[in-house]
Image 1 (cartoon, rainbow, N blue to C red):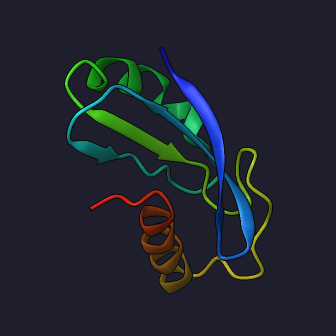
Image 2: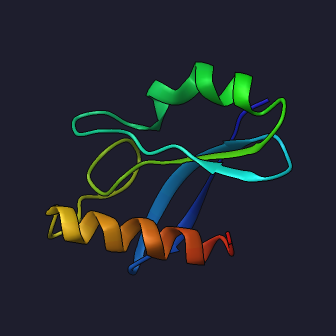
Length: 87
């Protein structure tokens, strides 16, 4: 079963979907998409892993960020993993 939640990242509520347990696997969508594209992958991977798929800033249910350049996305993903205490 896929669940959905929010966590504060860089001062913004960030939506993410998650399922399963065990070793974490992070799925990151491309531009003009959302975590919804990972629905089938989440279901399958969750059989063996704890799978997490965030909505990047400006996509899905996550509010638009002021900056969407690649270095900012890298920082966002890093801060997202820290907010969820992922290794």
